[in-house]
Image (cartoon, rainbow, N blue to C red):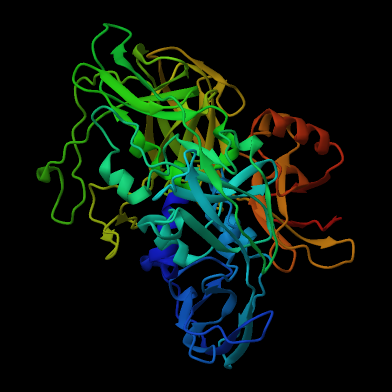
Length: 626
């Protein structure tokens, strides 16, 4: 999951964000940056704290620099490459851009980590380093708000070691907040994210907004072989369990008592009481629909209705709370409260590590195609209601999955391909979606290997004119295809299965069907749409989201749409396939998926600014927002 990778990366390696050691550009001019960090409300120094400069381009590597402040709040960073940066101060109680990160945004189809970071940084001053002269800066650190309280059981005992989270209201949903880097230590090691021996908790460095408090008891729901148990409880503190309560004492987040936070203020006695309740078991077998034999599978649980609560702990720990079937196909969960749940059943294909399958560089050796491959089962989603009794006789049957295969090629170009292409089969039930990636290198050839990742990299000798791809275990039902190219100089031109256009048609897969000879054609020769967004006062509007939607109804799908965000100067730019586009400003809280999005888009398309783009040309469009 992207948000999990980013959370880990933030703690361990933000100086290497996005950097590719094989493609490091020619060294550029550098400067020394000196400065002072002080508290905005008092002018007093922020002592012995870390301060980082995060590159506006989010490129990582030498694009980020860090230092510690001294006793007077002063710092010095040498050899800072020329560029535009944002400061990040990591000190308890100080508001950090991390607190504004919307991790759920990174889970949206087509979302990028870069756009999420730009949104988080938009309210922070930028620092320009010219690479010629030294730069001196003054960085004002704002004290955020704080929320503190205790967690109790309904018999009056304090609840010790309970996972506590504050969730900030954003639109119609609530999101977990990680105030700063130091908080990540608490996230994985107890700290402020667990109630202490007095049942107490305290969160600081919170940006202004409306919050609710969530307390989660430490429990492993898995009652069969698989993940979970002591290790999960130790690392995540039970954050992924379903034994949750919201302040002051409700099981329903919609009934929680909102807490309003401002800069520099603390809301105390925001207490949570855990009520007594009956808990139940849920279990059964996973079998083949074809022959009723046991199927090896993983089962994860999701509680229906939790969609508007994006809890980092729940998302990270969901699979760790999952169950795995035993040799007879049996599985079970324990200590579940009443409610409606969604079971996501995924067949397992256990990889077997064999040293003989890899060469001396650690690269996989080419394998001959087997004469016959066994059909793979597809995943399944099933809802179940847990009420007044244990349920241990639930039978889940899995059918064989469909297979999609074909090639990806660039039109009229024999020896050119982008580095990678992602082909996603988006099922009408999102949990059943699956994907394949096509990468432009041949692992069987002699290739350059990165000293850090040891992954093969393309060389002129290994570039291939087209690539085979295969998507297996596609669930039966209606599926649409979304294709993404990682190189902005290419675009998707067509995706055909015979006479069927997979880009404009939902394909209704049958169980075990084979859709072969699919041909995905890429074009080269994109156009560019750029512009500036200004407010009514003619000031640059930063952090504004713009979506570019083809006016051709047949191309009004994710594959052809582009979403960009204005920078601190209000500027935006996007490479697109040739054609006409509607340029639409999208509200920060407006979802861009589902029926709600389709309705909203239909209402705004007609009055949107239109622009036509030709191959190799740039069109400029300027916008105003209220």
